[in-house]
Length: 183
Ligand SMILES: [Fe+2]
Image (cartoon, rainbow, N blue to C red):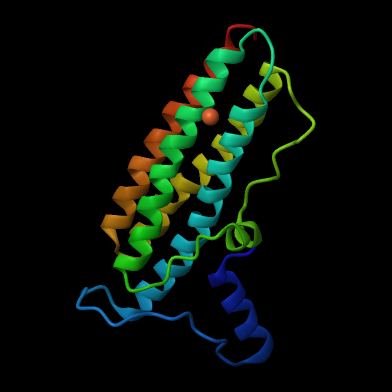
């Protein structure tokens, strides 16, 4: 899925004109409007993936079955709660920089980079695999965002994604510990 920045660049190349800019509020924040506009696009894309990840963790929490039910059911809920916190922090960072947080389910569905969570699986280890894949996909995005925010001179956003990346790595460990012993 393309980011807003990609789309803007492509549209500019195709038409030679500037496409419609997202709504940005005036702010005394000293990060330039141009930087804030780029950060807005970056953060809203990550917000979409985070909203998707949160609901995928709930999907696993609700539907897991098998002998490890209770442990996995509770673990997937803990991951969902942690991701809900990341969603909130990313959305609020968008607004702090003068943008509009675009975090509805429809907005998230249009922009997420996660693949859809399979509705077919039920057994515990299949959910461990599905959850681990979703976490690692988002984890890679979070890690990339640290450098992308750095390049835009926004240490605050880089720090936020450093924290998120570290959290996702921890949850991936908790989840994969269920499958690694068998390998
Ligand atoms: Fe629940």
